[in-house]
Structures are given as C-alpha cells and as structure tokens.
Image (cartoon, rainbow, N blue to C red; front, side, top):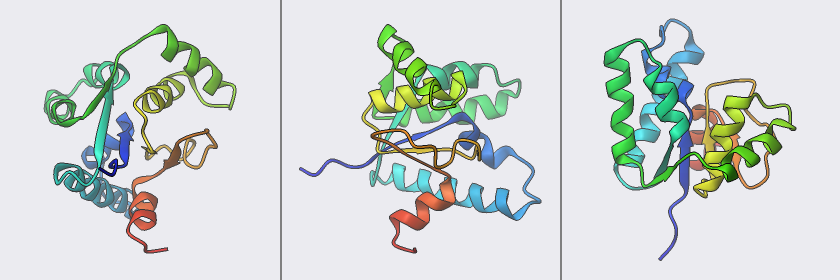
Length: 148
C-alpha cells in the first residue's frame, strides 16, 4: 500500500477563510486552502493535528471560528502531543531563524511524518527545514497538481 502524503496546516492557514477577502492573494490562498481540505476529506492526503493547534485555536476569541477549526482535529489521522522530544526538536528548528511557536508547529509536523507544512505566513514559506517542504496553499496546489 502506498503511503498518502501527510499534510500539516498551521493556524494561520486554518484561519485564512475568516480573513477579509478583498486582496487577491488572500482570496487565492483561501480557495487553495479550501481545495486542499476537500482533498483531505476525499482521503487523497492524510492530515496531522497537534497540541500547538489546540493551544492556538483555544486562544481564538471568536467561538464560530474556534468551532469550525476544531472540527479538523477529528478528521486528522495523526496527533502530536507535547513532549520533551518535540520541545528539543523545536529548539533546533529555532536555530534556523524560525520563531518559537512556528518551530514547535514544524517539530510536530515532523514528528507526525508530514511531507508538507502548509502556511500563509510569508516569513515561513520556503524556509529550508530537513525532511519537510514548507509552502503556502497556492504553491502546494500548483506543485501537486502539475501546474508548474
């Protein structure tokens, strides 16, 4: 059996559809993110979730957004809990110039064996982290659907 690629969407990616959609970049990222989620529902990809996503989503002051995003935890195939191993991995990732929370998200994605880390955070896109590809939703769709 061929392993499905595993995806990790960070919190800013989950929140993208709730952002103001006036800018073309935001609309494109929203459409790409929704497309990716439809592919996850169709089992074309597996999804990873983490304690970091739980934590950041719990801090969201908007109940509707919190509930909509938390549904993806139930869909996820993999879950990463906090551990000493994750914290140590996060510290190593921070040495690449990545902020603490982002480094922990990436550490969780690596722990779950994710192939892609999908984010709308431009500061993270294309950071070189071994064993995972960091892309925005639009680039993920372009790359995986052969539209290059």
